Image 1: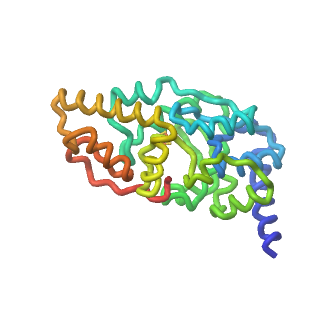
Image 2: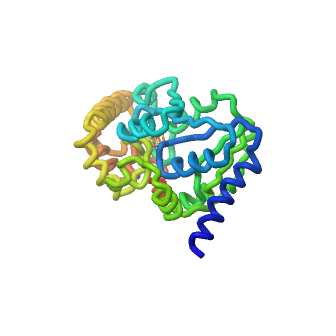
Image 3: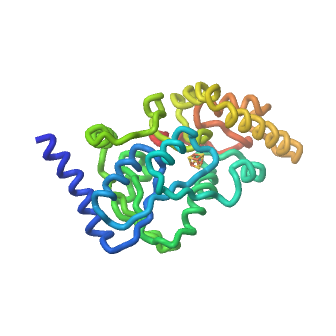
Length: 262
Ligand code: SF4
């Protein structure tokens, strides 16, 4: 019975792709994460013409980049116009309310690809925002239509599919991270904040650079007369390492942690 349900879920996803994307040339957003791995496999099974694209942010987990290059050698890497560090020097650190980095580092570069039909490994249970999407989303401004074949899959369905089909996946999942993505990201919970401290040792070059740039930026803003939420950059970093609620300027609106994103 269970295997029949599994079969139906997989067949439904492949049929969804065939029904909506047959005869199209499809952009597939690929992050190297578990949901992307399943989506790429379903695309392959559908035999619909497609290309995987990875948005390289420069803050990528080295082991994930290595994994993609080895397991998905045809995946195209898209690079942003400016580096994260260049963007950071003119802004404030990204946070759940000012998430400029996804736009600059990921979205902009992908918009240059002239493919309007786009498949993403987005799932309903990931966040309240995603729960409101539906399986097909049209973005008028870009004339893009997004299709989400695994929209109703639960996390355990994803892992079942990966294990059953012996699909390789990045080692960071076995190290305790729930999702791939940038090493330095505002979306980390208290749990992953603790893991970030662990990763600080392993990938120290990212964190040393982050701490140095935060310190530089903080003193630059103070010299411009800005009132910071924390008295010193060290205090800001201390809060940032703990979870995603660290404030930059004083009087920032009270924000809620975007639970479930990381
Ligand atoms: S994954 Fe995090 S740090 Fe990377 S672009 Fe998105 S919000 Fe920014």
